[in-house]
Amino acid sequence: QSVLTQPPSVSAAPGQRVTISCSGSSSNIGNNYVSWYQHLPGTAPKLLIYGNNKRPSGIPDRFSGSKSGTSATLGITGLQTGDEADYYCGTWDNSLSVVFGGGTKLTVL
Amino acid sequence: QLQLQESGPGLLKPSETLSLTCTVSGGSVSITNYYWGWIRQPPGKGLEWIGSMYHSGSTYYNPSLKSRLTISVDTSKNQFSLKVTSVTAADTAVYYCARHRLLAPARVAENWFDPWGQGTLVTVSS
Image 1 (cartoon, rainbow over the protein chains, first blue to last red):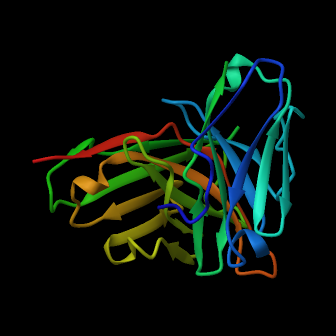
Image 2: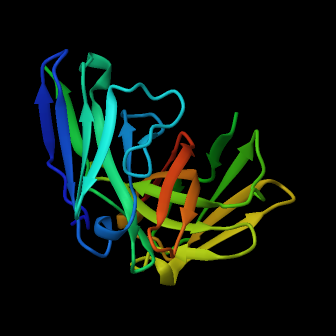
């Protein structure tokens, strides 16, 4: 049981927009920055978003992040088949630990 | 370009000690404001943070694993290591090392992992 709650799966057609939610509490998301990761099987996870809504160099602006209260959202526009992956949110919990969501599998139909 | 590579035994028996090393190239483990972390992914499950260490010795551990964990940093070899004692089948996972940006505790804690190593599968089986 993960501390942060994500939907197990989402799907959308190529070219469409999809959002992935991440729900937490005041001890984690509510008072700390959120990061998002893309994980393709067999590869190293990749940082997509940090500081709630900042993109590292090289991450296209099709990926965006936002936070409101104790929830965060990852948005992906202009979906491509190469975006099929597992997506994880992560943040700091005030119990002095890093917490991740359970992951969301994105299917591009 | 910073790169990380995990190494260590891939097969352990129950009750043995898991020992993994992460070799850092293209940068120094002594860099300021970055910790060095370990994360694992059991088969069919999500990511689980194990722990992180700063080169000066400050360490944070996952509370559920803390009693069995040791993370260390060797600045002379530009490596950091993970030890997990008394392993069971539940410790079977792909283990990743990563550079960890951690500014916490803070009014608003900042925390992210980048880059990650490719991961190494550790199987615990009798």
